[in-house]
Length: 206
Image: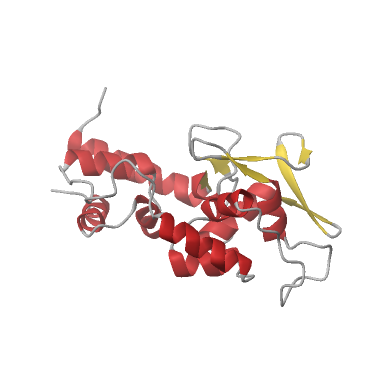
């Protein structure tokens, strides 16, 4: 009998959902989704293999929304893309951060979201590194008189909720600050449950 979580992953894969959408909805890791797809023989949707989600048209729409002053949250909601992709296009197209955005917080020139984008440097392999100030090994984001943990800000902006417990990279890059690659206690526990369920169904792999 297939575990309910595995059935949910499989159903979303068969419906053509992206890995990002499945991670967001079910709180499971990339590896668990990939294992489920391979174990159940679910093919990758035509046209998606070998390239990142989206197209040049989507990149152009992101750039246009950035130039119109749209927030990262608005672009993510409308186009279904991640903050790191938006930031990469902003940097590539040299689109400045707006300082007169309605509702901007009173402290400093930038909001926490803008500061995060300013100091997050996308890498060619899909991760992102922090280039701003640090407190030991922790990336530090200043907002007025307050020092925030930049990873917690990145997590909240990507997942739309406050993290539970420590925020850590869930990918292979220990320095990564990409919101989609960050995990909190809730995600790590969900990943462990999914991995255990997978092993009970399909056994361990070498």
